[in-house]
Length: 134
Image 1 (cartoon, rainbow, N blue to C red):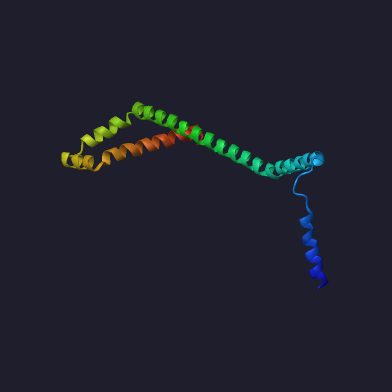
Image 2: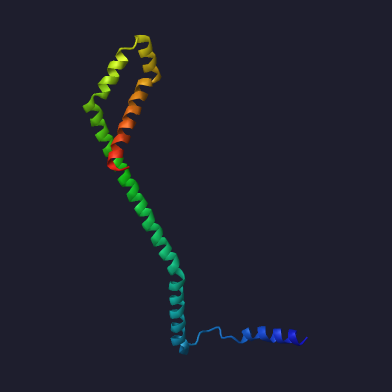
């Protein structure tokens, strides 16, 4: 019973709280707001640092992929000129023209000739990329 009386008295003291702020406590309110602002800065600083590092990592990954893409485009251009210089395209065209016309038309309809060209270009690009250190 004493505990119940103590709890009722303890919670009834909130009735005596002043609802209108006192003008004499402006300095105290300023001091409390200052500590609240400092606390908010300290509370959100780790999240801010985490976002900065995430942005830096995202930006470096973007730059790396951008450079890799342009390196690949450059290697493809070099491989195209290499294929033309060694005459690989004319060699493939001569080999295809030696086939009987039925086979040639069938391979052309199926896209087999374009596939051979793409595979040869891919091997040439891989060859150039090996020289570039990839």
